[in-house]
Amino acid sequence: MGWSAKAEAVLHEALSVQERLLRDFPDVPEYQENLAETHASLGNAHHSAGQDAQAEADCRRVLETYQKLARAHTDVPLYAAQVGSGYFRLGVAEHAQGKLDAAQASYDEAIKALERFLERQPRSPQQRNFLRNARINRANVFATRGDHARAAQEAEAIAGKEELITLSLYNMACLYSRCAAAAAKDAKLPLADRTKLQEQYAGRAIEYLRQSVAKGVHNLTIIKTDPDLDALRGREDFKKLVEEAEKKIKGEK
Image (cartoon, rainbow, N blue to C red; front, top):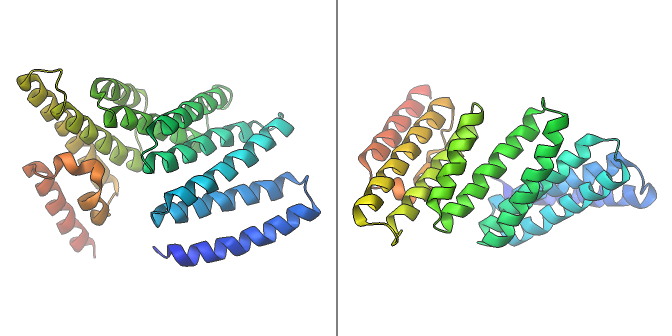
């Protein structure tokens, strides 16, 4: 509902209870899991409120807890997967603060951990989704640094592997938009090549954005303000897509 401050207060109460439980029962894995997941929820609340430094601290607590559990319980493969998702969450918080080196390193660790887990447990849709988004986000780091070719190569590899879910489609639109912005600034390319690549990337971004809207991404406020989509805002096909989405939402209401 967007009530980040209220969520934060409730989650801090939950942490207080869980910390008391862990003082009395320090070796109960379920209590440690509950603590980690509450920190993850708190991190989401902080991220939604734009408090990304606090979100990073929350994510580090999540990661540390699952690393401890994975070391102590090697017979529970899910803990190893949650180390991977912990690195992904940390990468998101670092990425939001512009810490590109740190974010890329965290995404790398997430990808390695999640790939190892999925080799043993291939039917794990939640962890596969974390892996997919870690790869998309890492490619976004490449694009932000100006390496649009590497970012687009990664995007094509992701798209060629499996069907993308709704949020992943939106993230792919953001990635290609970043590629378009990077291509437009690539001084190593002749102007004609820059223009051609920029159009190709922007076209792919619009294609993925259209698919994401068709499948259920209806938060027009985000679409209209997300800086990842800035390279598309002047385009007529972007304006038309937003207009069509607005009409569709009004019709559904």
